[in-house]
Image (cartoon, rainbow, N blue to C red; front, side, top):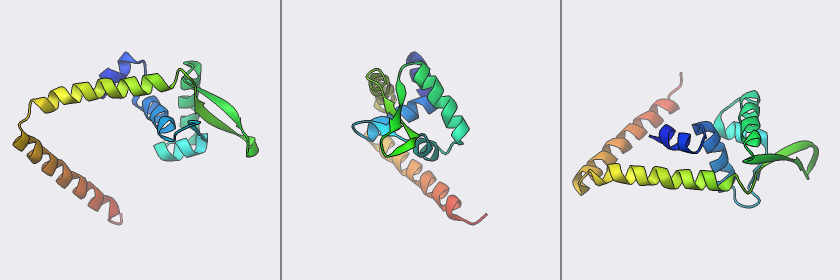
Length: 129
């Protein structure tokens, strides 16, 4: 469903996540490409490709890092904020339709089952390989 929502905004999930991360950072909505790559668990090359697409679309721009003459920062443009916010709203509407199909008891059951799954994933992640 998220893929369908994002297609309406001509965004991939990865692009949407990058825009969301910049938006959550608060004004001036900037981050280093390296920080974005670490956050997204991507190689620097993969993040560069993602940022290139977002920059081509006019949603982000690269600016010189005022603290490092060799570095650059990525910041949201005026056009970059609305697609992220609007896509979140559109997805929330879809999810509320799904949630409306469940009774209060069913929602509680679903939450308990999802919580159990998340604990199991976390447990497995913490086990040595």
